[in-house]
Length: 452
Image 1 (tube, helix red, strand yellow):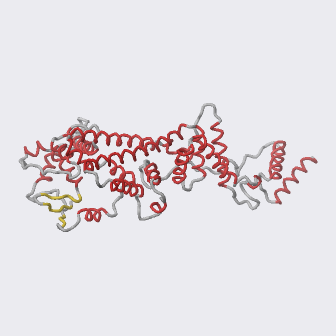
Image 2 (cartoon, helix red, strand yellow; image 1 turned 45 degrees about the vertical axis):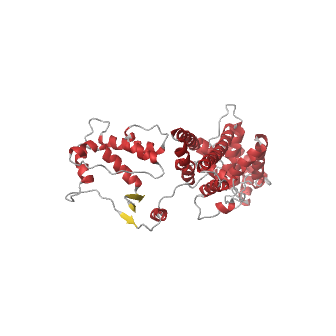
Image 3 (cartoon, helix red, strand yellow; image 1 turned 180 degrees about the vertical axis):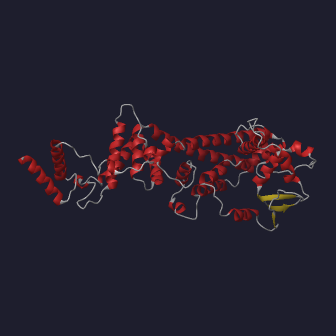
Protein backbone atom coordinates (compact mmCIF):
# COMPACT_ATOMS: atom_id res chain seq x y z
CA UNK A 1 0.00 0.00 0.00
CA UNK A 2 1.07 3.61 -0.53
CA UNK A 3 0.12 6.15 2.13
CA UNK A 4 0.71 9.78 3.01
CA UNK A 5 0.61 11.24 6.52
CA UNK A 6 -2.31 13.61 7.05
CA UNK A 7 -2.39 14.87 10.63
CA UNK A 8 -3.37 11.96 12.87
CA UNK A 9 -4.59 9.95 9.88
CA UNK A 10 -3.10 8.40 6.77
CA UNK A 11 -4.35 8.97 3.23
CA UNK A 12 -4.24 5.75 1.20
CA UNK A 13 -2.96 6.64 -2.27
CA UNK A 14 -2.91 3.06 -3.53
CA UNK A 15 -4.31 -0.08 -1.90
CA UNK A 16 -7.81 0.98 -0.86
CA UNK A 17 -9.40 -2.20 -2.25
CA UNK A 18 -6.81 -4.39 -0.49
CA UNK A 19 -7.51 -2.73 2.87
CA UNK A 20 -11.28 -2.90 2.37
CA UNK A 21 -11.10 -6.61 1.50
CA UNK A 22 -8.91 -7.31 4.52
CA UNK A 23 -11.35 -5.40 6.72
CA UNK A 24 -14.27 -7.53 5.45
CA UNK A 25 -12.29 -10.73 6.07
CA UNK A 26 -11.47 -9.69 9.64
CA UNK A 27 -15.13 -8.78 10.23
CA UNK A 28 -16.14 -12.30 9.23
CA UNK A 29 -13.50 -13.73 11.61
CA UNK A 30 -14.42 -11.30 14.41
CA UNK A 31 -15.88 -13.81 16.91
CA UNK A 32 -13.10 -16.32 16.43
CA UNK A 33 -10.29 -13.75 16.67
CA UNK A 34 -11.66 -12.52 20.00
CA UNK A 35 -11.86 -16.11 21.27
CA UNK A 36 -8.20 -16.53 20.27
CA UNK A 37 -7.16 -13.46 22.22
CA UNK A 38 -6.90 -10.90 19.42
CA UNK A 39 -9.20 -8.32 21.02
CA UNK A 40 -7.70 -5.08 19.68
CA UNK A 41 -10.20 -2.98 17.69
CA UNK A 42 -9.96 -3.15 13.92
CA UNK A 43 -8.64 -0.26 11.89
CA UNK A 44 -11.18 2.18 10.45
CA UNK A 45 -11.57 3.24 6.83
CA UNK A 46 -13.22 6.41 5.57
CA UNK A 47 -13.78 7.34 1.93
CA UNK A 48 -13.29 11.02 1.14
CA UNK A 49 -15.82 11.20 -1.69
CA UNK A 50 -18.25 8.55 -0.37
CA UNK A 51 -18.99 9.04 3.35
CA UNK A 52 -22.01 6.73 3.12
CA UNK A 53 -19.66 3.81 2.38
CA UNK A 54 -17.89 4.36 5.70
CA UNK A 55 -21.28 4.32 7.46
CA UNK A 56 -22.21 1.14 5.57
CA UNK A 57 -19.06 -0.62 6.84
CA UNK A 58 -19.46 0.67 10.39
CA UNK A 59 -23.06 -0.59 10.53
CA UNK A 60 -22.11 -4.05 9.16
CA UNK A 61 -24.48 -3.46 6.25
CA UNK A 62 -22.35 -5.74 4.08
CA UNK A 63 -23.54 -8.81 6.00
CA UNK A 64 -26.85 -8.63 4.09
CA UNK A 65 -27.31 -8.85 0.33
CA UNK A 66 -27.33 -5.46 -1.40
CA UNK A 67 -30.22 -4.34 -3.60
CA UNK A 68 -27.68 -3.03 -6.13
CA UNK A 69 -28.75 0.61 -6.01
CA UNK A 70 -25.39 1.68 -4.57
CA UNK A 71 -22.44 0.18 -6.45
CA UNK A 72 -20.08 0.42 -3.45
CA UNK A 73 -22.53 -1.41 -1.20
CA UNK A 74 -23.10 -4.07 -3.86
CA UNK A 75 -19.39 -4.86 -4.25
CA UNK A 76 -18.74 -4.87 -0.51
CA UNK A 77 -21.68 -7.22 0.11
CA UNK A 78 -20.59 -9.46 -2.76
CA UNK A 79 -17.02 -9.65 -1.41
CA UNK A 80 -18.27 -10.51 2.09
CA UNK A 81 -20.61 -13.17 0.69
CA UNK A 82 -17.70 -14.72 -1.23
CA UNK A 83 -15.63 -14.87 1.96
CA UNK A 84 -18.52 -16.48 3.84
CA UNK A 85 -19.13 -19.08 1.14
CA UNK A 86 -15.45 -20.03 1.17
CA UNK A 87 -15.55 -20.79 4.90
CA UNK A 88 -19.10 -22.19 4.85
CA UNK A 89 -19.51 -24.25 1.65
CA UNK A 90 -23.05 -25.17 0.64
CA UNK A 91 -22.11 -28.86 0.52
CA UNK A 92 -22.12 -30.13 4.15
CA UNK A 93 -19.68 -32.90 3.19
CA UNK A 94 -17.07 -30.43 1.93
CA UNK A 95 -14.36 -30.33 4.64
CA UNK A 96 -11.62 -28.83 2.48
CA UNK A 97 -11.44 -25.63 4.57
CA UNK A 98 -11.99 -27.18 7.97
CA UNK A 99 -9.87 -25.48 10.63
CA UNK A 100 -9.00 -22.59 8.30
CA UNK A 101 -10.20 -19.91 10.73
CA UNK A 102 -7.81 -21.01 13.47
CA UNK A 103 -4.87 -21.14 11.03
CA UNK A 104 -5.64 -17.87 9.26
CA UNK A 105 -6.14 -15.54 12.25
CA UNK A 106 -2.55 -15.69 13.58
CA UNK A 107 -1.21 -15.32 10.05
CA UNK A 108 -3.21 -12.11 9.70
CA UNK A 109 -2.81 -10.63 13.19
CA UNK A 110 0.22 -12.09 14.99
CA UNK A 111 2.93 -9.45 15.35
CA UNK A 112 5.50 -11.64 17.15
CA UNK A 113 7.21 -12.67 13.96
CA UNK A 114 7.56 -16.27 15.20
CA UNK A 115 5.49 -17.85 12.46
CA UNK A 116 4.25 -17.22 8.94
CA UNK A 117 2.62 -13.83 8.77
CA UNK A 118 0.81 -11.70 6.20
CA UNK A 119 2.37 -8.27 5.70
CA UNK A 120 1.76 -5.35 3.36
CA UNK A 121 4.55 -3.86 1.31
CA UNK A 122 4.36 -0.43 2.90
CA UNK A 123 5.49 2.80 1.26
CA UNK A 124 5.01 6.28 2.68
CA UNK A 125 5.40 9.29 0.41
CA UNK A 126 6.55 12.70 1.58
CA UNK A 127 4.13 15.42 2.58
CA UNK A 128 5.32 17.63 -0.27
CA UNK A 129 4.39 15.11 -3.01
CA UNK A 130 1.14 15.58 -4.94
CA UNK A 131 -1.10 12.54 -4.19
CA UNK A 132 -2.77 12.44 -7.64
CA UNK A 133 0.59 12.51 -9.45
CA UNK A 134 1.83 9.71 -7.18
CA UNK A 135 -1.25 7.62 -7.97
CA UNK A 136 -0.89 8.14 -11.72
CA UNK A 137 2.80 7.26 -11.58
CA UNK A 138 2.09 4.06 -9.63
CA UNK A 139 -0.67 2.92 -11.99
CA UNK A 140 1.11 3.73 -15.25
CA UNK A 141 1.17 0.64 -17.46
CA UNK A 142 -1.80 -1.04 -15.79
CA UNK A 143 -4.94 -1.92 -17.74
CA UNK A 144 -6.57 1.44 -18.53
CA UNK A 145 -10.22 2.19 -17.94
CA UNK A 146 -12.33 2.41 -21.07
CA UNK A 147 -14.15 5.49 -22.25
CA UNK A 148 -17.38 3.95 -20.98
CA UNK A 149 -16.06 3.28 -17.47
CA UNK A 150 -14.65 6.79 -17.16
CA UNK A 151 -17.81 8.47 -18.49
CA UNK A 152 -19.95 6.40 -16.13
CA UNK A 153 -17.89 7.61 -13.19
CA UNK A 154 -18.11 11.18 -14.52
CA UNK A 155 -21.91 11.13 -14.75
CA UNK A 156 -22.61 9.28 -11.49
CA UNK A 157 -20.27 11.15 -9.11
CA UNK A 158 -22.39 11.65 -5.99
CA UNK A 159 -19.75 13.80 -4.28
CA UNK A 160 -20.40 16.59 -6.80
CA UNK A 161 -23.75 17.27 -5.09
CA UNK A 162 -22.46 17.65 -1.53
CA UNK A 163 -23.70 21.24 -1.39
CA UNK A 164 -27.28 20.02 -1.81
CA UNK A 165 -26.87 17.42 0.90
CA UNK A 166 -25.38 19.87 3.38
CA UNK A 167 -28.13 22.45 2.93
CA UNK A 168 -31.27 20.42 2.44
CA UNK A 169 -30.47 17.24 4.33
CA UNK A 170 -31.54 13.68 3.61
CA UNK A 171 -34.57 14.53 1.48
CA UNK A 172 -32.55 16.16 -1.31
CA UNK A 173 -29.75 13.61 -0.95
CA UNK A 174 -32.27 10.83 -1.60
CA UNK A 175 -33.71 12.72 -4.59
CA UNK A 176 -30.26 13.12 -6.19
CA UNK A 177 -29.43 9.52 -5.46
CA UNK A 178 -32.66 8.25 -7.04
CA UNK A 179 -32.05 10.32 -10.20
CA UNK A 180 -28.49 9.01 -10.53
CA UNK A 181 -29.67 5.48 -9.74
CA UNK A 182 -32.12 5.76 -12.64
CA UNK A 183 -29.25 6.62 -15.00
CA UNK A 184 -27.23 3.69 -13.62
CA UNK A 185 -30.16 1.29 -14.18
CA UNK A 186 -30.72 2.53 -17.75
CA UNK A 187 -26.99 2.29 -18.41
CA UNK A 188 -27.02 -1.38 -17.39
CA UNK A 189 -30.10 -2.07 -19.51
CA UNK A 190 -28.56 -0.48 -22.63
CA UNK A 191 -25.18 -2.20 -22.15
CA UNK A 192 -26.92 -5.55 -21.74
CA UNK A 193 -28.94 -5.03 -24.92
CA UNK A 194 -25.87 -4.01 -26.92
CA UNK A 195 -24.09 -7.17 -25.79
CA UNK A 196 -26.76 -9.39 -27.36
CA UNK A 197 -24.89 -11.07 -30.21
CA UNK A 198 -27.68 -10.75 -32.78
CA UNK A 199 -28.27 -7.07 -32.02
CA UNK A 200 -24.57 -6.14 -32.02
CA UNK A 201 -23.96 -8.39 -35.02
CA UNK A 202 -26.00 -6.33 -37.46
CA UNK A 203 -24.15 -3.16 -36.36
CA UNK A 204 -20.83 -4.88 -36.93
CA UNK A 205 -18.69 -2.38 -35.00
CA UNK A 206 -15.38 -3.21 -33.36
CA UNK A 207 -14.48 -1.00 -30.39
CA UNK A 208 -11.22 -0.74 -28.44
CA UNK A 209 -12.73 -2.00 -25.15
CA UNK A 210 -15.35 -4.47 -24.02
CA UNK A 211 -17.98 -1.81 -23.27
CA UNK A 212 -20.43 -1.56 -26.19
CA UNK A 213 -22.13 1.55 -24.86
CA UNK A 214 -18.92 3.32 -25.87
CA UNK A 215 -20.42 3.46 -29.37
CA UNK A 216 -23.19 5.79 -28.16
CA UNK A 217 -20.92 7.81 -25.88
CA UNK A 218 -18.49 8.44 -28.71
CA UNK A 219 -21.35 9.45 -31.02
CA UNK A 220 -22.64 11.84 -28.35
CA UNK A 221 -19.17 13.33 -27.86
CA UNK A 222 -18.67 13.84 -31.60
CA UNK A 223 -22.02 15.61 -31.84
CA UNK A 224 -20.80 18.17 -29.28
CA UNK A 225 -17.75 19.11 -31.36
CA UNK A 226 -17.54 21.32 -34.42
CA UNK A 227 -14.42 19.47 -35.58
CA UNK A 228 -14.20 16.08 -33.81
CA UNK A 229 -11.28 14.94 -35.98
CA UNK A 230 -8.66 16.72 -33.84
CA UNK A 231 -9.66 14.83 -30.69
CA UNK A 232 -10.15 11.47 -32.40
CA UNK A 233 -6.92 11.62 -34.42
CA UNK A 234 -4.81 12.32 -31.33
CA UNK A 235 -3.25 8.92 -30.72
CA UNK A 236 -2.15 9.92 -27.25
CA UNK A 237 -5.79 10.33 -26.22
CA UNK A 238 -7.11 6.81 -25.59
CA UNK A 239 -10.36 8.12 -24.08
CA UNK A 240 -11.71 10.80 -26.45
CA UNK A 241 -15.35 10.54 -25.36
CA UNK A 242 -14.47 11.07 -21.70
CA UNK A 243 -12.22 14.01 -22.60
CA UNK A 244 -14.95 15.73 -24.63
CA UNK A 245 -17.77 15.13 -22.13
CA UNK A 246 -15.66 16.16 -19.14
CA UNK A 247 -14.61 19.38 -20.88
CA UNK A 248 -18.20 20.04 -21.96
CA UNK A 249 -19.52 19.77 -18.39
CA UNK A 250 -16.75 21.98 -17.05
CA UNK A 251 -17.35 24.60 -19.75
CA UNK A 252 -21.07 24.67 -18.98
CA UNK A 253 -20.37 25.04 -15.26
CA UNK A 254 -17.85 27.81 -15.95
CA UNK A 255 -20.59 29.85 -17.61
CA UNK A 256 -22.48 29.78 -14.33
CA UNK A 257 -19.56 30.80 -12.12
CA UNK A 258 -21.70 33.36 -10.31
CA UNK A 259 -24.04 30.69 -8.98
CA UNK A 260 -23.94 29.62 -5.36
CA UNK A 261 -22.64 26.12 -4.64
CA UNK A 262 -26.17 24.75 -4.25
CA UNK A 263 -27.36 26.20 -7.56
CA UNK A 264 -24.18 24.99 -9.25
CA UNK A 265 -24.79 21.46 -7.99
CA UNK A 266 -28.35 21.54 -9.34
CA UNK A 267 -27.06 22.93 -12.64
CA UNK A 268 -24.54 20.07 -12.91
CA UNK A 269 -27.29 17.51 -12.36
CA UNK A 270 -29.34 19.11 -15.14
CA UNK A 271 -26.35 18.94 -17.52
CA UNK A 272 -25.74 15.30 -16.67
CA UNK A 273 -29.39 14.39 -17.21
CA UNK A 274 -29.49 16.22 -20.55
CA UNK A 275 -26.40 14.37 -21.75
CA UNK A 276 -27.86 11.07 -20.65
CA UNK A 277 -31.15 11.79 -22.42
CA UNK A 278 -29.14 12.15 -25.63
CA UNK A 279 -27.52 8.75 -25.05
CA UNK A 280 -30.94 7.17 -24.52
CA UNK A 281 -32.26 8.84 -27.67
CA UNK A 282 -29.35 7.51 -29.74
CA UNK A 283 -29.96 4.03 -28.36
CA UNK A 284 -33.65 4.27 -29.25
CA UNK A 285 -32.65 5.02 -32.85
CA UNK A 286 -30.62 1.79 -32.90
CA UNK A 287 -33.73 -0.01 -31.64
CA UNK A 288 -35.77 1.51 -34.48
CA UNK A 289 -33.20 0.23 -36.97
CA UNK A 290 -33.33 -3.21 -35.41
CA UNK A 291 -37.11 -3.40 -35.44
CA UNK A 292 -37.47 -2.17 -39.04
CA UNK A 293 -37.07 -5.23 -41.26
CA UNK A 294 -35.69 -3.33 -44.25
CA UNK A 295 -33.29 -1.09 -42.32
CA UNK A 296 -31.95 -4.05 -40.32
CA UNK A 297 -30.98 -5.99 -43.44
CA UNK A 298 -29.58 -3.07 -45.41
CA UNK A 299 -27.43 -1.80 -42.53
CA UNK A 300 -26.23 -5.32 -41.79
CA UNK A 301 -25.29 -5.83 -45.43
CA UNK A 302 -23.47 -2.51 -45.82
CA UNK A 303 -21.47 -3.03 -42.66
CA UNK A 304 -20.41 -6.47 -43.80
CA UNK A 305 -19.25 -5.59 -47.31
CA UNK A 306 -17.93 -2.09 -46.52
CA UNK A 307 -16.02 -2.94 -43.38
CA UNK A 308 -13.93 0.23 -43.19
CA UNK A 309 -15.01 3.14 -40.96
CA UNK A 310 -18.10 1.38 -39.58
CA UNK A 311 -18.21 3.53 -36.46
CA UNK A 312 -17.96 6.75 -38.47
CA UNK A 313 -20.69 5.51 -40.82
CA UNK A 314 -23.04 4.84 -37.89
CA UNK A 315 -22.35 8.32 -36.54
CA UNK A 316 -23.31 9.89 -39.89
CA UNK A 317 -26.38 7.66 -40.20
CA UNK A 318 -27.55 8.68 -36.72
CA UNK A 319 -27.29 12.32 -37.74
CA UNK A 320 -29.09 11.67 -41.02
CA UNK A 321 -31.88 9.69 -39.35
CA UNK A 322 -32.56 12.47 -36.83
CA UNK A 323 -32.46 15.17 -39.49
CA UNK A 324 -34.26 13.52 -42.43
CA UNK A 325 -36.58 10.94 -40.86
CA UNK A 326 -37.10 7.25 -41.56
CA UNK A 327 -38.39 7.48 -45.16
CA UNK A 328 -35.42 9.43 -46.52
CA UNK A 329 -33.08 7.35 -44.41
CA UNK A 330 -34.29 4.17 -46.12
CA UNK A 331 -33.74 5.81 -49.50
CA UNK A 332 -30.23 6.77 -48.42
CA UNK A 333 -29.41 3.17 -47.50
CA UNK A 334 -30.62 1.93 -50.90
CA UNK A 335 -28.49 4.60 -52.55
CA UNK A 336 -25.46 3.51 -50.51
CA UNK A 337 -25.95 -0.11 -51.60
CA UNK A 338 -26.38 0.94 -55.21
CA UNK A 339 -23.21 3.04 -55.11
CA UNK A 340 -21.23 0.20 -53.57
CA UNK A 341 -22.44 -2.47 -56.02
CA UNK A 342 -22.33 -0.32 -59.17
CA UNK A 343 -18.53 -0.36 -59.28
CA UNK A 344 -18.67 -4.14 -59.68
CA UNK A 345 -21.38 -4.51 -62.34
CA UNK A 346 -20.24 -2.04 -64.98
CA UNK A 347 -19.11 -5.08 -66.98
CA UNK A 348 -20.98 -8.25 -65.91
CA UNK A 349 -18.69 -10.40 -68.08
CA UNK A 350 -15.75 -9.42 -65.88
CA UNK A 351 -17.27 -11.13 -62.84
CA UNK A 352 -15.50 -14.45 -63.34
CA UNK A 353 -14.07 -16.56 -60.57
CA UNK A 354 -10.81 -17.30 -62.42
CA UNK A 355 -9.28 -15.54 -65.39
CA UNK A 356 -7.73 -17.12 -68.48
CA UNK A 357 -4.50 -17.77 -66.57
CA UNK A 358 -6.37 -19.62 -63.86
CA UNK A 359 -5.85 -16.93 -61.22
CA UNK A 360 -8.67 -16.00 -58.81
CA UNK A 361 -10.15 -12.59 -59.53
CA UNK A 362 -13.11 -10.52 -58.32
CA UNK A 363 -13.32 -12.42 -55.03
CA UNK A 364 -14.65 -9.44 -53.02
CA UNK A 365 -17.07 -8.43 -55.77
CA UNK A 366 -18.53 -11.92 -56.09
CA UNK A 367 -18.77 -12.29 -52.31
CA UNK A 368 -20.61 -8.96 -52.07
CA UNK A 369 -23.11 -9.78 -54.81
CA UNK A 370 -23.81 -13.27 -53.49
CA UNK A 371 -24.35 -11.93 -49.98
CA UNK A 372 -26.75 -9.28 -51.32
CA UNK A 373 -28.64 -12.03 -53.12
CA UNK A 374 -28.88 -14.10 -49.93
CA UNK A 375 -29.97 -11.12 -47.85
CA UNK A 376 -32.78 -10.18 -50.24
CA UNK A 377 -33.89 -13.79 -50.58
CA UNK A 378 -34.22 -13.78 -46.78
CA UNK A 379 -36.22 -10.54 -46.89
CA UNK A 380 -38.67 -12.13 -49.34
CA UNK A 381 -39.45 -14.92 -46.89
CA UNK A 382 -43.10 -14.57 -45.77
CA UNK A 383 -42.15 -15.62 -42.22
CA UNK A 384 -40.04 -12.45 -41.83
CA UNK A 385 -36.88 -14.34 -40.94
CA UNK A 386 -33.78 -12.25 -40.20
CA UNK A 387 -30.50 -12.84 -41.95
CA UNK A 388 -28.07 -13.90 -39.15
CA UNK A 389 -25.24 -11.39 -39.62
CA UNK A 390 -23.81 -12.30 -36.21
CA UNK A 391 -23.33 -15.91 -37.33
CA UNK A 392 -22.26 -15.05 -40.87
CA UNK A 393 -19.34 -13.01 -39.51
CA UNK A 394 -17.98 -16.06 -37.72
CA UNK A 395 -17.79 -18.15 -40.91
CA UNK A 396 -15.07 -18.09 -43.53
CA UNK A 397 -16.93 -18.51 -46.80
CA UNK A 398 -15.02 -19.63 -49.87
CA UNK A 399 -16.14 -19.38 -53.46
CA UNK A 400 -15.34 -23.07 -53.78
CA UNK A 401 -18.88 -23.55 -52.42
CA UNK A 402 -20.23 -21.67 -55.43
CA UNK A 403 -17.67 -22.54 -58.08
CA UNK A 404 -16.49 -26.06 -57.17
CA UNK A 405 -13.04 -26.87 -58.47
CA UNK A 406 -13.68 -30.59 -58.27
CA UNK A 407 -17.20 -31.01 -59.61
CA UNK A 408 -18.86 -34.36 -59.98
CA UNK A 409 -18.52 -35.49 -63.65
CA UNK A 410 -21.63 -37.15 -65.13
CA UNK A 411 -21.15 -40.87 -65.76
CA UNK A 412 -23.39 -41.33 -68.83
CA UNK A 413 -22.06 -40.09 -72.18
CA UNK A 414 -25.26 -38.22 -73.05
CA UNK A 415 -25.13 -36.41 -69.74
CA UNK A 416 -21.47 -35.56 -70.30
CA UNK A 417 -22.31 -34.14 -73.72
CA UNK A 418 -25.02 -31.95 -72.21
CA UNK A 419 -22.62 -30.82 -69.50
CA UNK A 420 -19.99 -29.86 -72.12
CA UNK A 421 -22.60 -27.84 -74.06
CA UNK A 422 -23.50 -25.89 -70.91
CA UNK A 423 -19.86 -25.23 -70.18
CA UNK A 424 -19.25 -24.11 -73.76
CA UNK A 425 -22.20 -21.69 -73.66
CA UNK A 426 -20.97 -20.19 -70.36
CA UNK A 427 -17.51 -19.75 -71.85
CA UNK A 428 -18.96 -17.94 -74.88
CA UNK A 429 -21.01 -15.66 -72.60
CA UNK A 430 -17.92 -14.85 -70.56
CA UNK A 431 -19.34 -16.36 -67.38
CA UNK A 432 -16.46 -18.85 -67.22
CA UNK A 433 -12.94 -18.05 -68.40
CA UNK A 434 -10.96 -20.92 -69.97
CA UNK A 435 -7.58 -20.97 -71.77
CA UNK A 436 -7.92 -21.00 -75.57
CA UNK A 437 -6.53 -24.54 -75.94
CA UNK A 438 -9.20 -25.83 -73.52
CA UNK A 439 -11.92 -24.07 -75.49
CA UNK A 440 -10.66 -25.80 -78.65
CA UNK A 441 -10.63 -29.18 -76.93
CA UNK A 442 -14.26 -28.74 -75.83
CA UNK A 443 -15.32 -27.81 -79.37
CA UNK A 444 -13.53 -30.86 -80.79
CA UNK A 445 -15.25 -33.16 -78.33
CA UNK A 446 -18.65 -31.68 -79.12
CA UNK A 447 -18.00 -32.05 -82.88
CA UNK A 448 -17.01 -35.67 -82.38
CA UNK A 449 -20.17 -36.42 -80.49
CA UNK A 450 -22.25 -34.80 -83.23
CA UNK A 451 -20.54 -36.86 -85.98
CA UNK A 452 -21.00 -40.04 -83.99
